[in-house]
Every structure is written in structure tokens, then in C-alpha cells.
Length: 116
Image (cartoon, rainbow, N blue to C red):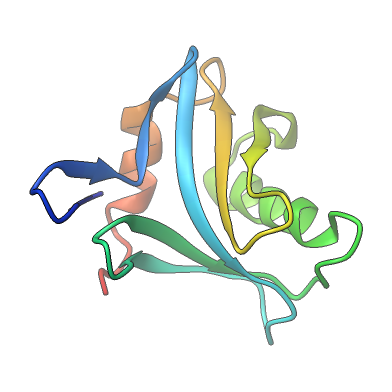
């Protein structure tokens, strides 16, 4: 669940943050179907969870659909997720409440995803 930056420093997809977890996501709205696809790294080596949703990127609909997708797949309450940055961008950072899931639990959900 990590990548490396050009200097060789590890960059995680999920990390501890403020009594919970921070999750890096690259979201594609208006897709044919909603799904959690893979772990991908950008040109700088920054890893992201790649996800797609059928919702349009208007008035937070795509963000709401992303939260619903992750909550259902990982059996967590929707209220445990908060978009902390990138609300209007494809790349987002989500916070997952520590009472709902630990970094290890989220990492376990990510472990079976393909790497690209």
C-alpha cells in the first residue's frame, strides 16, 4: 500500500491521521459502473486508490457516491468518511474515523487490489 517518491521516501495510500486514517483516492465520475479498481502510482510515485462512480461531479454527488461505495464494500458507516481535501478534484484525501476502522483494517481491504 505504499509507493516511493523520487528521493526513495515511502508514500502510503493509507496512513494514520488525527485519531483515524487518511486515504488517498483518485476518483473517476460518470463511469459505466461504480467500483474500487486498483492501487496506482502517478509519475511522481505517489500511490492512489483508483475508484470509479456512476454519479456526476456536481454538487458533491460523486463524493457522496464514493463514500457510499467504500462504506458498503468495507462494511463501515458512511458517517465515518470525510473528504478532507480535493472535494472538487479527481484526487482526494479522505479521513476515516478511528472508531470505525484502523489503518491495519483499511490496509487489509486494499491488500487484494491489483497494483498498476
